[in-house]
Amino acid sequence: YNDYYISNNTFICVCGDFDPNEVSKVIREYISKLNLTKKELPERIIEKEPINIIKDYEEIDKGIENEMVKIGYKIPKKIFNINDDDLLRCYIDLILSCYAGTTSKLYEEYKKADLFISCGYSVRVVDDYLVITIDALTKDADLFTKHVEKDIKNISIKEDDFERKKNLYLKSYILDFDSIESVEYNITMSLMVENKILYDEYSFIKNMNYKEAKRIIETMTFDNKSVVKVK
Figure (tube, rainbow, N blue to C red):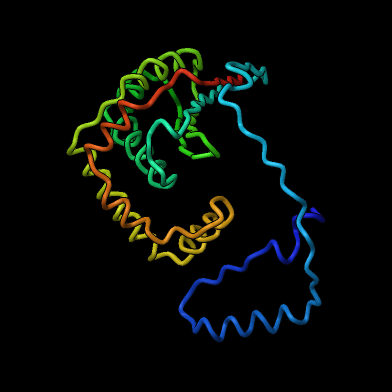
């Protein structure tokens, strides 16, 4: 806490309809009264993340009524030949939304088969790897996992579904600016997680295309996985 929660490792995010020069003046005047001193941050030791996962399976017995499962896939990002991590993340997220999102045929099939009570997924680029996690609350974690492991290797999407989802992403991006809380949250999270603000997100979503999405699907590998089951 004393090493990292310091003034020169902090930012202030102010969102709203105001004169930025006036707000900046108020902030500077306030901070000047705090007598803050700059402190050197500890040197970060960044270790090379190995491709191999630590555990491919772990089971935790908590005596819960329904089971929980998290399935993680770790994929070297270099195989996709996309230099922009944000663009790669958006492509993968859009592909998974088309194939297994709440409006997909696969999602409906899982619901009818009563494979889950609730489920979701996340996509992150961490260091040299693309990380996809799928989590679910389910009556039978083993059965859910078995279906996911089979179906994720057969991802396919239609062009009209791709374009529909892309347009939805663009509309959601624009609508986010109607909420000052959403703007503040997106800026704050970008700075904390990515250490930057994404200024061109609209442009690269708009320029995403179906042909590239198909190439990415053909490149994806799902052999490097880890499963955690809580029962």
